[in-house]
Each structure stands twice: as C-alpha cells, then as structure tokens.
Length: 383
Figure 1 (tube, helix red, strand yellow):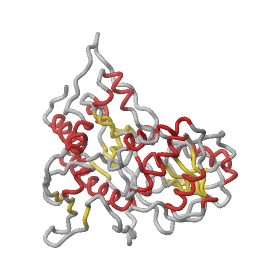
Figure 2: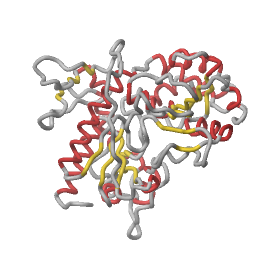
Figure 3: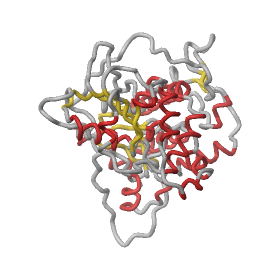
Figure 4: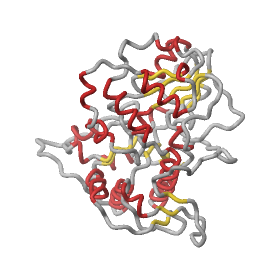
C-alpha cells in the first residue's frame, strides 16, 4: 500500500530574516542547489556533494562541535555487550522512539544507537547544555505564566488563548477528552480520537505521508506538531483548535513541552493536573525561544531530506518524500536488518502499512552513518 502524495503548491512565505544556520538561498553558478556554508558546521558537520542534483556543500574544518556530532551518531556498527545466547529484535512500539528498548535487547550501548524512529529537529540547540544552566529551577514549584506569555508572543497569538501542556500528547489528550472527534481519513496519527462523528482532526503535515494540507482543506482540530519544521514558522493561523509539540521543535522528548491554542482554551486546562509542566521545562523554554530559527531549521531539514531520500533510492527502495522531517520507504524487513547495525527506523504497521518504514531526517553525521549501514546491506554484509 502506497500513500498518494499531493504536494502543496504556491509560496510558503518562509523568511530568511535572522537565520543563523548558514543555509543560503540558491546562488548563481550552483544550478539552483542550496549552499550550506562553513558557519553551519557548528550545528552539523558539512558533507561532500554525493551525486548530481544533490545538495552542494562547501568544505570546512572539523571542529569540536562537529566531532561531538560524529560521536553522537556512533560507529558504523556499535559493539555489543557479552551475551549468553542469540538475541531477538523486539517488536516495534506504537509511536517510534524504540532506540533504548532495542539497545537493551541486542546488547548495544544505548548511547551508540542512531534512533531515526523518532522525528526530532536534528539541528536544534543542545538542550542538555541549556538545561544545565537552569537546574536551580528544580527547587521551585512551576509557574507557567511567563513561559506561556513568551511562547504566545513567538507564535503570534494572545496569551489568554494558549495553554502549555506536558508534551504534545498531553495537548492531544486534553482536547480529545473535552470535545472528542474523528479523523478525516486513515492512516492518521494514532493518538487522535477515533469517534464516528464530532470535530474533525487533521495533522499538518499529515502523519505519516508528510504532505502539507492544501489551502482548501478544513478541520476543527489541527495537529501542528511538525508544522514549524516543515514550513519555517510556528503556525498556519487557521480557525479552530491547534495542538503543538515543542518536543519536536527543540528535540527534547524528556522535558515534555506542548501547547493548545484556542479561543476558549480554559476548558481544556481542566483536563490537566496542577503543575502539569515542570519548572525545568518552563525555565529552559524561555532560553530556547531566544535562539529559535524556524526558517533556517526548515531549510536545513529540507536539504537533508533530499539527501536522505537519495540514499534510499540509490539502494533500490521506493521512497516518498513530501514536506515533513521524515521520508516513507517501502522496504519490508528493513527495520530488522538496520537494527542489527544499531540504526532504528519506525515500523509503520500501526498505520496499516506493514511494508513501510518512516525514517526521520538526521543530522549530517547521522546521514553518513546511515549511508554506511545501507551500503553494508547492499553488499550482503550484516553483523
């Protein structure tokens, strides 16, 4: 089963103003290709041009930040711990993020896993370093008022219309408990309600196809968890209820930061416990908003998505690459084969697509490691 993708046409109004990523617009003499300049190496080590039509990259020295990224991507095949017998690959979870569980089952160091089953911003700031500067907040009870005001200002909505939640999943749950609803069509994100009537829910970009909603599409609840990374701005500003996930934007699933935007947002707040968002998460959010570069991150993800899709196509698999920070690959059995090399991709059985995997766009070091893993598979070599 393949999802038919319909790409949205027309301008996207992605501004380059204030971009710090070093992703420049196509320049004369480049054949329309995007240029990633040397200053971008601070967030992701630069890559050589792989094939005709791929992203052209200027060379730059490998600095300490690049070395750390390479270490994070891990070796081509991570070493296993001693085992008393054969190890089996655990079945996939319903939502990805299976890296730690797979590492335990296969005897890998969890830090050596390249987890492409979870879709996080590969170019986000180092949230661990930011959190380390705010550990004193752990001694205070949470007060979300300042952080909510700052996020509302960044998104461009009135503070009284925004509710901070304990992650995007909590935002979805609060809205679903209050108004219920139904999905427009299947497949769709698994946490959306599956009623037979009521408000219509739609993820944008659509999960799992990755296709952005057309200008003529309507819904009552818009899940914009991946919208900022796909389009380069916080929200489409549509009528209805919006749920979002800062977990994806800032690559911090452990902090649990999400939000709801609605005219009557107070009715969703009653479905949250007191002190729903941690003091550390609130303190970190204020600093993360100051260094946010949605336009730059979106362009970097789009460029890396081209390379990611090209890797799989060169290996002979059918790829669907739309607008989201991932690609869909028709590749039965690929999850199990890549897992043996410490690379995790998202099995799509829960979407009703058992022959597909969803692969998150990684940073440059992750692309290099994935290329080595796919090369080993093509050569018939598997550890």
